[in-house]
Image 1 (cartoon, rainbow, N blue to C red):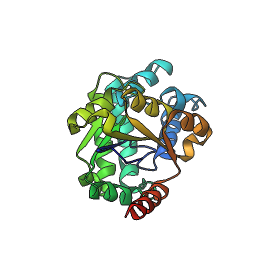
Image 2 (image 1 turned 180 degrees about the vertical axis):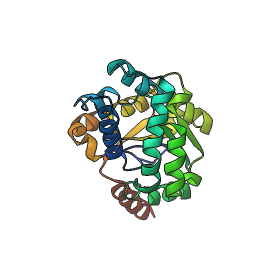
Image 3 (image 1 turned 120 degrees about the vertical axis):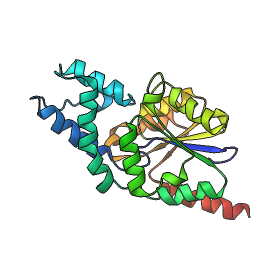
Image 4 (image 1 turned 90 degrees about the vertical axis):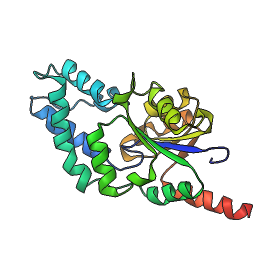
Length: 225
């Protein structure tokens, strides 16, 4: 998987950190304030959208009587504490980041999340120093499945897209990475288990967690020696 690659780019929620449970809880609480239940199709409908695009979708679909900035501010306040105290890294994630750094890889994050929330979780988990660049979908023209964010990260890293390896947990993100011309590894997540076959068919690789991948890569390195 790592052969011929010079950079690894990670999605955040559901890929690098175990946080999708949190967003479902926030959606339920937020919509409940306006008398709505959380529709079964909501997560798939907003999959890959930037923070701004998601706020616009909520405002239009649920006829919310507030501006987009107000919606985003409420979500930030609801999520920051959870990001700081309740969201862990995916199993093996930090060890894998160390492995990549040891191999001279450049590392980036390409997330649909807002910057305040990204900074909160990366700071809390003390993994921000591993990354050369952190980019949010609000910094590009279109969110996933458009390739914009991955192309921007590779440009900032000064690495050809063909030499980039993407890690993603949802189909929209996988498609964004493929459209950018990159190799994509799908990561298993509890909140997208029903999409496993779709993810496997779209991605170049599929892993349950980073411990699995780290073990395979370590064995390969030892065998090569």
